[in-house]
Image (cartoon, rainbow, N blue to C red):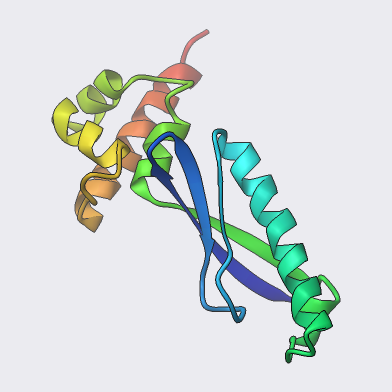
Length: 136
């Protein structure tokens, strides 16, 4: 089984999804919703594969047969935007110890955090989730 990496980021007012290097060519889609962006990528990938086959391009057998899974990898901007429906930047700031303004820069794609900062954000989100789970 093949694995395709798809990187999800936030740009402007949309989620953007682009493929990694596992397949030839570039696939980029956008959508206003997280789930819509994932669905659009799956559809564009299938269209891309069909086009490659029609053009006579070399297509790995696993890709032709649909024997693959897509690994959606969230960049920090998309991670923060996808959590907006559950919590606020202010709450994430309190839980992670990262300044709200800095988080806003990350969420809008203006800055990209170092790996240690991203880990603090994820840990903060986990902390918020644990607090929700502890409610009886």
